Length: 507
Image 1 (tube, one colour):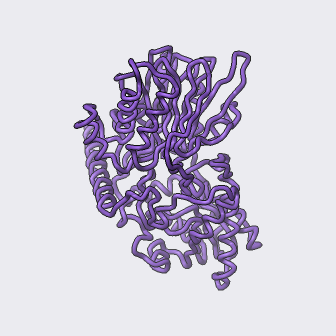
Image 2 (spheres, one colour):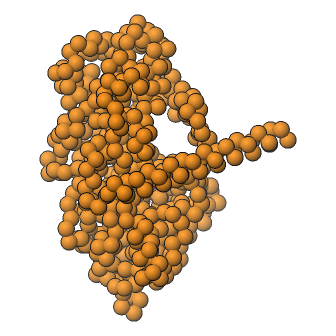
Image 3 (tube, one colour):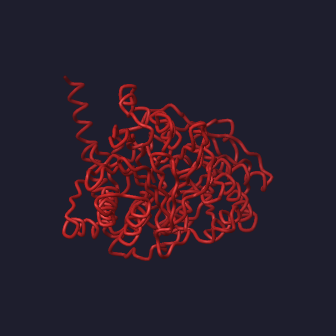
């Protein structure tokens, strides 16, 4: 999951893009970048870390132009940040093009081979986003006549991208001297919306991963970019759109509604906040049906994304709702976390229990989901240390048993606590007295109830069913090995950094 923005305005856009990245910071804290367009000239700055750490006043002053794209990166496949893989990416042939991408291609290796052998294009990094950029550049070259572009030619190139690329992708693209292009994969897995603002000099357009960016930046939400659709806004603010895929269907990632998206966003006509309230209601229904023997004194959320579900659950169970954990919002990034002990300590640095809400009580902790179980285990122990008599744990999402290959870095199967374990076994692993999971059918109904027009969702991390139909066991094994290798390299880098820090202290 990454955050992407694209804008064509009547005023300089550097501050607008920066503010938009801050709003989308939750979608990626690994790296950030902005590219602005001044006529046919691009100005770029990007780097590793949070948005506020990447950009300084001198960087912002150099980002000149009335159009641009921006990206905040969340790494997938176990990769660590490197300067070469921060986005947006750039190519200068056959046109100057910059691209920011959210998602993950599932046929990256085949595309790399085709780009090298057939298209005579070279990819410099391991990023599938650079692959996507080069595929688009080649398709633009093939579609253009005398190296001239118009909306029809650009849309023909996007059709070529859809024919060649598999997986999940939402992209924003600046084409030097022409304008802003945005498109979404034919399955509509990753979110993409666009909005418009009316000024005395004409319309301005903003494309973003989530509607919350439009709200906060003063743009009116027009609609979502449809699966397989491309939109193009030229430098004068003229708007064009076309369906570019032969077979398109809407299958939004259900994990966006569980955890990834901000609660104040609306994705494909579905309020994220409303779905989380519904998750609390259906979880309460399940507790009433099957867990009447569980004697609960108080409901406590694990901040922050589980709060709406916990509030609604407590209301429907007629139980007290309390804030039992306080989150430290000012803690710095944990740059080095090589071992389990350090990861556990970082949880206690970020959360602190309010003892009076736990002492002598049977508490029901509510979280949005359980992935590795590391954080859940530590939080259960914190509740016990604070004096809880019994600790029950409820997940607003079903068990995460399978890898996600569409842009969320779900760990390898052996790292997923629910993989190969029953619910009582998971309860023992995290140390709670009772574990309650949401059912997948109920979760789908919760999200669908907010917008019944959306009938299908991408839910592979819960079901093991991959909507694109091209994900084989061989591919999954390869992804897992890549993640193991990435984690191993990260541990080596962390150890080397610790050694350097130790030598500096000795010096």
